[in-house]
Length: 283
Image (cartoon, rainbow, N blue to C red):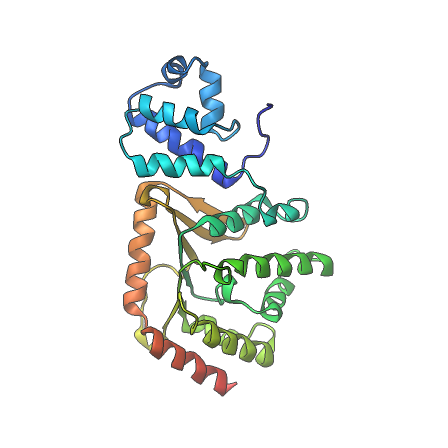
């Protein structure tokens, strides 16, 4: 089987975790290859997500790497075993790889924690609100491109509606609630939708009002995707050129603490719901 030309974020992450295990064991790629009858290039391609692995090969590598964490090994095996194409692959010709990686990461997360300062979180947005956001894109998007992005974002919301919804916690600043993307009508309907979604089991929404003063972080949108084991947690940051995924332990830990502090700063869920309802009634 030829190497993959464009590994997904999940395939890349599997390779990264195997590299971490190898380096922790103090083995070079050449030495690791010799242990399984492969060359250095093969190990390098595995660790960059270009070659897939069988369950047995992963368990063999983990054994050679002296990894006694059975939960982690089982999680890595599950990552390799999931070969079914996700719905996001339908958009590979029209959207960037970073957008597809975002949908894949959300789909496989065991829990989602989000913070937004200037707009409503994507999984809680209405179609008209999404359209208003993309109408301001630079360079300007064509109408078909806008519709592709709207349908893609709506399909991402499936994680909140499936048989076993992903637990979802979001912190939103008051600034995001008062930004009138699409005008008063669109904003009012978006806030009503936000209030309704906040009543769903498994969804926790908190608001940081202006009156609470300085809040943690720089206002950058942050997404924290919990994995089946803590070592596989991922952080997503919004950037002008696309989503950035982080997996370094120190970075992941930093953003977990940041979200903790933001949640501590925010109103509780009931007060947040009443706060959003009040702003919607003002429009």
